[in-house]
Image 1 (tube, each protein chain N blue to C red):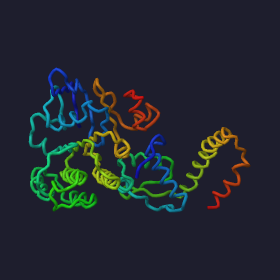
Image 2 (image 1 turned 180 degrees about the horizontal axis):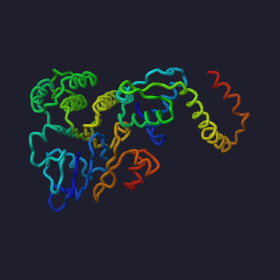
Image 3 (image 1 turned 135 degrees about the horizontal axis):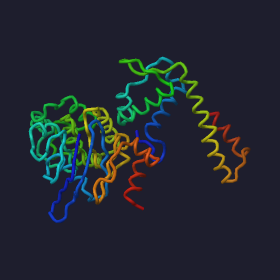
Image 4 (image 1 turned 90 degrees about the horizontal axis):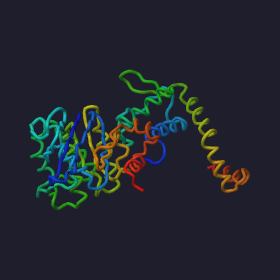
Length: 233
Length: 121
């Protein structure tokens, strides 16, 4: 369960990106985090994962990300849109990542690399952008944490890879896991999402299950609901 | 697979997918349907979405569940699906088609030959 009350964060103090965010995300769902460019989706994921220090009350499974407790770090994995690259193979990367996560699954890593056609023994810096992305996503999924936050995961992936990615994630969804996916590519991920969270200037304007959204808005078409709420012509 | 947007909710598209299989005779009475996880991975969707489909199928008695074993097609599944789909055809699809034909100034006889041709295939 992710909870936030009055969460605020600004890269410059006078102009916060996240303003008084209230959030309540029960576990066991895949949240599609939607919002215009620059509205603070990536910032929000970084704050929740502890990479940035926000203000206000916010907890993941009752733990304050700002305290960076070991149990917290072991329970969450952020997959940023662009990740710093090391000049090593994914095999070696796994060797240093594995001990950090008690849940780490070599089975998931092998399966992900296999299905996404990423060589485990090639240096990351020698890979194409798409391959790098898939390699890092494979490694992060393999961490097998109960909280997985992904920022535009399908960006740069070809069509077959997107399909493999969806299968991998679909297989990881269960009642104990919470996944947040921030995206503009709603079409890529629509089937994986069962909750929708929409950010606007004044905070979270919608966070509900697709089922409830369907009842309230007469459609479960995420794009349609998004355009209606965010007021895009 | 990619789902059509602006159409039915995904859980209903999957419902139709399963009903189509029954209508084509690909699933027989008392035959087990794939598990929630298998369907979720195959169709690349959230297992919770599959659960909504399963609930609908259970509620309409198209499938029954055996505890700990999974879900199986009922003896009446084919009849139930045929009824539901027939009423959808007659009450929704045909009126919509009729309206479209009228809009384009077609008479039923204009499309009869083409329809016969299509149904022969």
